[in-house]
Image 1: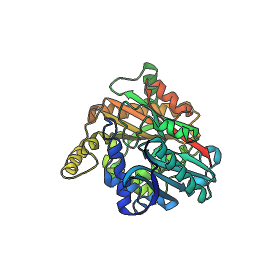
Image 2 (image 1 turned 180 degrees about the horizontal axis):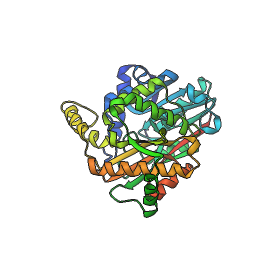
Image 3 (image 1 turned 180 degrees about the vertical axis):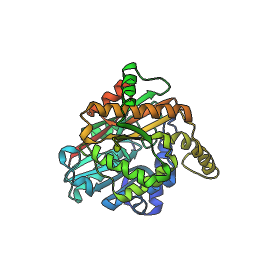
Image 4 (image 1 turned 90 degrees about the horizontal axis):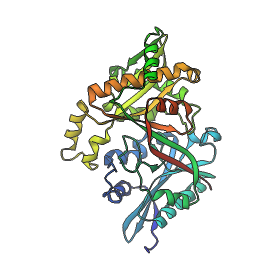
Length: 384
């Protein structure tokens, strides 16, 4: 049995590098783990480089044994999340932890206890985890779907983590799931009829975004998102610094024909964002753009050819969500993007999500287009 690990808070650039490097050793034999670009991973945990820190604070911890890093975790508090209704996931007194990786169960439990202690010292009385670190980044622990790689901006984990977290006294708070879809196949006849009916409606227009007007289009999508998702569990509005960061990160993989805005009588009422799976391009780079990774990535970005497309976000304004029109707009956007993904990028599969397990509308749409759940993530909670 290994000796207990020593756990310490970190803040230096050198220690943050150790924090980022650990998974490269722990997952080196896992064929389904996708090594992140180390520069980007460092940016996410560096306050000066991540707009999320404009309304949040975090403490990173490393666990070491005999001079070797054997675990890591973050503890963090989002001040905007504290203002959300408690029945919507966060609320007053709710802190979070994330980025948990460890060599063994004892180290994992010690790291979680350390994160809990920091949260208590900050006045928190409840913990949610894992959330790394914003709800908009990589929320939840993978508990189903270890047999294939995650898509862009989705997490991966070791199967044993589930038992370790539950063994530390955590219970289920919310389930998130992703859906797998064969995009080479046409949708069932009933869905096709709904799409054709929408095409005959002169009030409906499904248009591509215009990347040359990136800021304007982003503002339209953000307005719909904040309205459409405002009642969802775990919703925290994106702030201007975060929006700027998202724009910088995602603009290279934004393509006009993969993002659609639905207009009703000229008013934007729904959107769907689809991204080519960048993980397919970065996985062989093993975390580094040097010496020639940058050239390979730039070449890929000019005209991606991918197996998988991911739909990370879609939404319909609240006033339409209970109507048949909401589903019709969703089916139309999905179908138009499906055609473009196959014809222009060579895609054969799509992944939709994450989707809350109790989001009846989105789950019904996923079922109607013959997709199936391929990955399940759980966010856990514990009273401190």
